[in-house]
Length: 134
Image 1: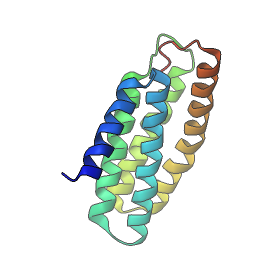
Image 2: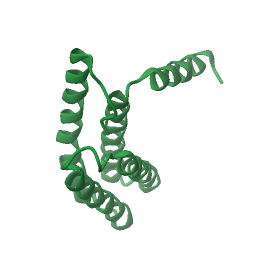
Image 3: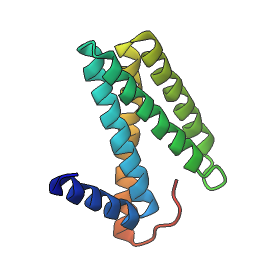
Image 4: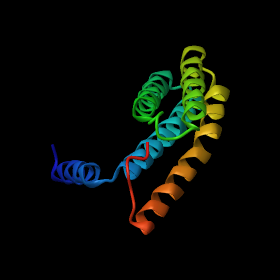
């Protein structure tokens, strides 16, 4: 492993370990959107192996978001869970059928959610009152 890669790995590890729950959710959303953007680009270039990898990783992130969603804390959690199920199915279909439009649909659904979580995390950070948010 090169020194630059080691430094980046250490930085990423420390960022995750020191992040608040809300910041962790934002990190997941950031990577989810990045994976979907990369999958879209790979699909357009007909690089199906790369697209597959990005779509599978995006589905793994959706699974993590589903597992960490606190259904008992927020009455809208069931609706967010339903969106996660829909997007995960769209990503699976995009992968199976090599369908860039399904990838784009998932991206259109998740991008505003990422922005909302980013704003919520900033709001919690400035108010100084973060509890388990996800």
